[in-house]
Image (cartoon, rainbow, N blue to C red; front, side):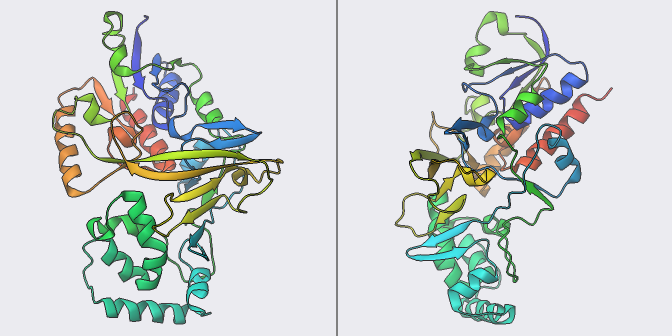
Length: 370
């Protein structure tokens, strides 16, 4: 095994951006990836000529022009706008919460009417300082919207009652009093034409890559002990330290993907199912991300579940208990100057794609400065 400047563990966006920047600086990098493919959770696979998001829908959005220009170096993006639909029993609503949602729910037309109903329900609930997600949601959108569009979906997603979840989770959800179904407020938005995998392929040009390679098996081999001067680890920080302080909690997602012999199954890329009695959280119809006209379609049902060893962790459970545990691992990481931790698992933090790219780029500028 030849000697490298950096061993990068994980071929997702974080590792790929860092590798790309390092190679530009003349560094030699080896990327190892436990999966049989690159691109991590943004991996897209061609099925029936449709780019299928194998690990859930990934819609690129950002307000940072620097990040937008950067990612456009690797792919052309279309003008897809994320406008999900929510289904509650036999009722259908637009997302995010906007005047189309309120008009359907209450039969009203004006922002003043919508604000009046929400304020009335907020006062009836009587919470001034929300301490959990349920209180925060009702304070933001009233009881009707909470009961139909937030409660069941959120409890399925997190596996916990809304009254047991931190308030900050719901603050990411857009709320607006205009007839606008665009989920994101960001200036730039779209899907790469041809899928995400090609982006990571281009980022990794000039880098050696080993797939189907588990880091912990890799470093046990004597010939790999000193393969690189430094390691960038984008896996689970608690796993790296053999769970010495205990395991951090995550939520995972299970996908059931089907090929259907019809052109158009649901008429939208993303449809959320918000009632508690529907076991999945949403159905993704992948062709609509790229305005596909293929004769068949591919759909994926998403089931949220508690993470356990052997399945992919997706969402950190950033409550007080887990954040305190992560701080212990972070302190231990500081004793290892030759190992850098990054990405959503290394930093135990949920990242949108643009934030992943920016964090990796910033790390590269600091780490690789002359």
